[in-house]
Length: 325
Image (tube, rainbow, N blue to C red):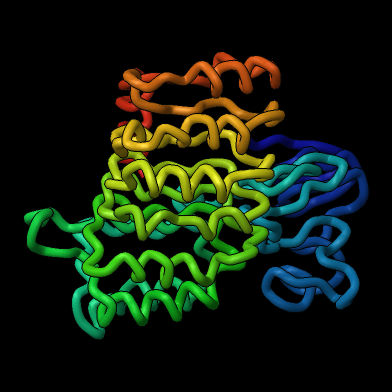
């Protein structure tokens, strides 16, 4: 709106109270200054800057880019008399820029890495940086005959992961068929000892007993490990259980549909690995297993409710949320 204020004439936005004339934005209680505040030209000498390198914005409020992690947009810092803002608040963290909800995520479906160069778009995204969540869903194939990853196609991705592992918090290799089990070890090699990785998901991938992701034992911040339907068998599940021993950051573990009942020792090993972990929220296993040893270990930690047997009603909700990314 427009208003007449003070003894002078003119239009004012932001409510200048002193005698004045002219047209001003974001006015304070003193006489108005040129747009952007102070005696300097628009924005304090340079667009979005200030007249001093140590002062990020003019005192009366210039037009400056918002800064800070995850934020974005432009803001006009308001003086005591008011004003307006674009993409930022007055004293708190700046508001997210348009589209920031998807920042840091690289998602690709129908992934098939069979030969050199197939990983080029993934490699390019990782090299640009800023990726914290990597989601690679395998292409639909004849599971018995055709892989989605061969060593030649995965080699470039492995190298890119080496440079990006320090910033990747979530990695999803869902629905993949690996030609050799050592490809899995190659993909996880860059994450050995990672202090960034929090979520690892191989759901519905052909890991096999030899491809059990034992490297996760060195990831001290790992919160979620999803290995449903990965053909691990009893031996692979045992290897995973041993790897998790002492990993107190773990909150979610899914080992369903892996023929764990092939091993008489697997549940007992898992019970020992998870004993004392009060952070557990979900441990998903097949409903036909004898889980009393595990149940007792979880009860001692006060998290017996974390044990989930059989299919889970929450899965549909998780799938819907993932499809919205």
